[in-house]
Amino acid sequence: MVVEPNGTRADEAKKKRRVVLRDPEPLLNSDPSKNLNPTDGDAVVIDIGSSELRAGFSSADGPTLRYPPLVSRARDPGEDGRRKNFVGYEALHTSVRSGVRSPFEANVPFNATLLERLLDGTIVALGLANEKKIDRPFVLTEPPCQMNNSRAFIMEVLFEGYQAPSVCLGVDGLFSYMYNMYSSTNSTNSLSQFKDRNALIVSSSFRATHVLPLVNGRFHAACAKRINVGGDHATEALARRLRLLYPIFAPALSYDRVNLLREEICYFSSDYEEEVNRLQRDADYFDQVETAIEIPSLEGTKTGPSPEVSCLRICSRGQRERRPELVKTPTVCLSSDRNWKGREI
Image 1 (cartoon, rainbow, N blue to C red):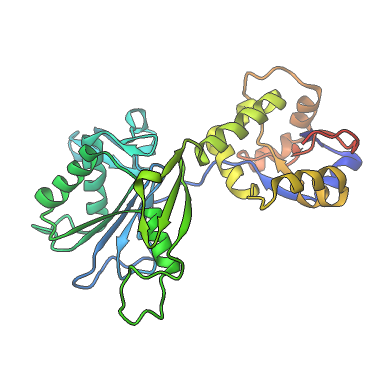
Image 2 (cartoon, rainbow, N blue to C red):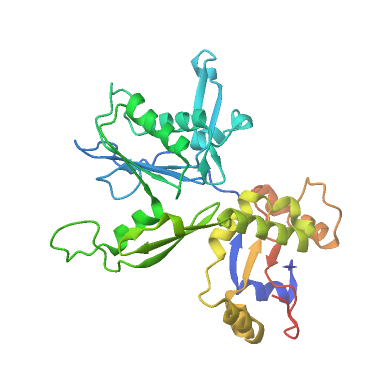
């Protein structure tokens, strides 16, 4: 990572792909463009993940709700100080985020109270709170080999609390395989018929990766494997790596910023060894995939003085008055040096 404030090196960096290291934009729990008026008989579909909850109706093209599975309970100043449940992005508000919690431990739901509040907030956001009973089928996802007590509590809330007529629980990886590999030429219209009845499904999530074997159209749970590696671990590894290599920028490398950076510039390689060898021997290809990152201002942090950063603060003072949230002058490139011999990737 090289700071390039001015001169020839800065001119070269302008030719590279540039990404701004920024905070995630505040989002809403519901998408205003989605229709919240389902037809009769539409099922309520809820994909409960450890990093994001997606919910909607079966007739929609996509989920109506998308937000992190976070719950906070605090007093609402607008309702005579009564305690209220805040779900999703509402729980990340400054006034209530101190008590934010997740019902998940890794990718398994373990807190029944928080899970009930999360489901209640989802039902309210879907516009079903005023119904005496929810006379719609429910389709929910669950992790592979979920514990019986977690599943029993979900069933209790859906049947006794919402009075749902029917509930379908399934693994999201198997649902995805069923949707993508379903044989449209099947004359019996049975969902048990796939194009490939034998498969090895690799389902990678935020906290874990599951390997799900499918033999003759059936899932063999006894042969499934769980690997405790997911998107969260990739973000943590990238954040630790960047903070270790460039401690001067450690205050700016927060988890949320690095996670957004990973989603924007990182990619899967079909052949990792070949990819690394090509980056080492092919300078043109390295320049092609190299990314310049604009770092926010470090003014006001406890970071020790640095000649480069001090110079950048002085040069960018005029820009900071116009755009205080971002200083474009400090530029960081994901390359340690320009010496191609003995380069370490």
